[in-house]
Image 1 (cartoon, rainbow, N blue to C red):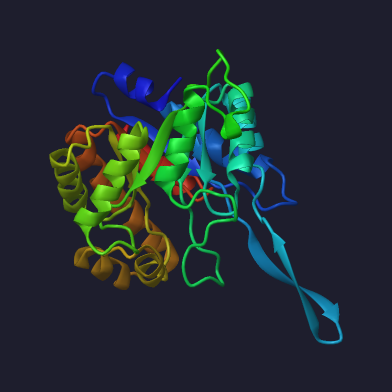
Image 2 (image 1 turned 30 degrees about the horizontal axis):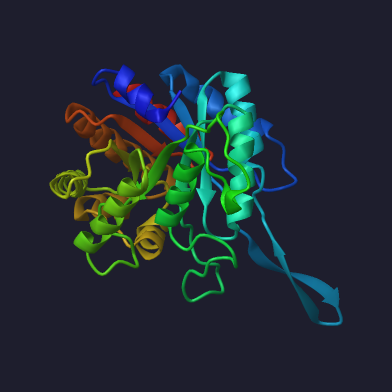
Length: 318
């Protein structure tokens, strides 16, 4: 079932969902199941599975020489989606990236999703590689998320690349895209960023999931400005609980987000990571309760593959 249909069927009730990360290659899937199991009592209608793009590693050749190799450390997104769908009878949402993939490779992935009955996808540009100053698309790939949305939407119309075939049994993907309450780090302003979001919706995006934020006022302002710009699709807030002292530096640095001063002071007063984790849980609970009271369609949690803190939050909210 489509994400938008789940929202419609909920008739105003706030739903629970979360995002997981595939294990690094060489690891088994059982640990992932062990962290999904405790969250199933909250009846998530869908689970997101991230996709990693390629990255460079350096292999020691001996004699002080290193060999630069291109690899993907967390493959298997589609296989994990199929496995979760089968094991838990829940819809899954694979993340589909521009970065590191040609349009042909993207089409193959989407065809495989269609075969497997996976009809929700999250369309993302993806980040630049670690050794790149800025994002560079793969030769023959989509440059921006709006281009990727357009490709998926064409497939929904039965139009494949290179006009090789037109079919009656069309795909029917529900397309999610990212939104940024504090603007994308590369955007000059929030309004400019909202214009890019409007382009993605006009190209066929069906719903929006926001980047993490820690101040609900920024989400509400973002939604108001999006609606004023004519973006009328569901806008799902993304929530991540703080868990470590270094999150105070890493999250603003990587995601260009602001942390509320009250939260910073609460973390700084903690004596260890256990206390910080509890502060993060309590903050996320209060965020969630306020958002739920405001009638958000879904509360979407960035679990990072761990369920303990998400379970504690959900138990107080749902």
